[in-house]
Image (cartoon, rainbow over all chains, first blue to last red; front, top):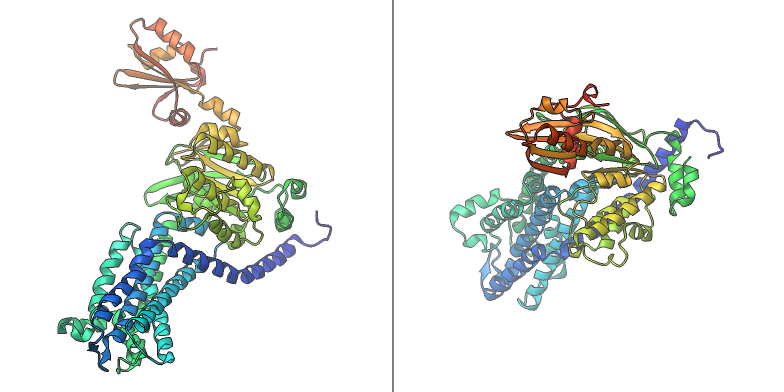
Length: 278
Length: 332
């Protein structure tokens, strides 16, 4: 019906270019919508929120407040402060492992991911949303524990230390998001929660997230540096002044684990794409 | 061509008509050309050529495991052909530009249950450059009054309607529906059929896979029958129905298959099978066959006549090991 005379291929090229520009302009909207949906979806799932948010709060409430007069760590910090850092680490690691690991495994195994793959949703939006959701829950856990510490544990710290603690915990979730993603692509929907727990709980204990590492037997203290949550907990402790060791080594360790887990996740993703969509 | 269809289209159609300007008139919306798909040693689809026309419902009809879903996955770019080619709107089905023009309703065992219907729809609408207006999606899928409900609280039929709604969000030029009415009650099924007809009348190309002949018959402009990964018949619903409208006659008879042929009561394409002492005949002329059998074998017992299931009708079309009546054997 067009009255302008234009070579069809030129017109098609021009249209494709316009469409691509518009697509780029829509990406932030898609990301925002995807993150919002992911957050709402997970926030309404007690199977996620109770273990991920309520357990760290409960554990901190029991151990952090009952033993609040105790002291732990190289700086002999009060337990009520020390355990905010370690249970905060426990919380953000869980939020990432369950949010990505169980989330991806479930949606992949039950065909929902295929529905999304058939749509024009950019694949990156799916992962960005899950990482953002996990980090938002990580921040929520950090804030809840901090408030409990202030109100119930009478922990008093300068504002910049609280901010440093929350930021450390939220950004420190990165390697665990990558590990979760790898789990999500390696295991099936039914075994994902069990496998995630098998990895998460022993790793949390041996990293000193439940009981300060200084109180654990030497054998466990020796293997802790091989576990990623240990390094995040040391950084969280540094943020509140409860650890005096150098942060650089822990940052390097976490960066190394992130690279390793991203590599595993990418390999697992490619393997699944080949199997499912090849 | 597209302009002629526009007046009946929902708002938003104008920009879609522009977007389609680079499709040459008369082009198929999507094509499989000699497509073969192997999964390891299993050939799920063998040398399948099919073409989907705008403004028409094409039904891919076949029993479970026939290769329908594989054909759908190829058309949606969810898998690549081992041989042959796939083209959707003249392009690669994996490209975003192509996917923006396709709506797909797939078989999925679980959809996130803790999102509301409107949240699911709102999210899918953001994926498309010119989404169908929200109210139109709700109306077309019959979800009025349900859009605030959590997905997990819906009945099976309502859930299927939401999946249908998600397929419509992008105001698609090609709609791919993989067994959309599985598990639906009669009423929901009829409503979905009406919705599909309406979308077809708006000029969209529709691919519908089903294993129900009545569904293909009710909706399709053309039917492609597929079995064991191959196309075994294609034509209008009337043509296909006449080819699969066989009934099954079972009996215990002393007549050998050749003797039954000699009765000259069978039609072309009828099938005779013998399992143990039971003879089974798939025929278009059940009454005549029964009459001839009773005359030919007074000691015949265990007579049963039933309409053949679709599975058996397909078998009649694809039979390779059974005795099939050839045109030379048909009574005139």
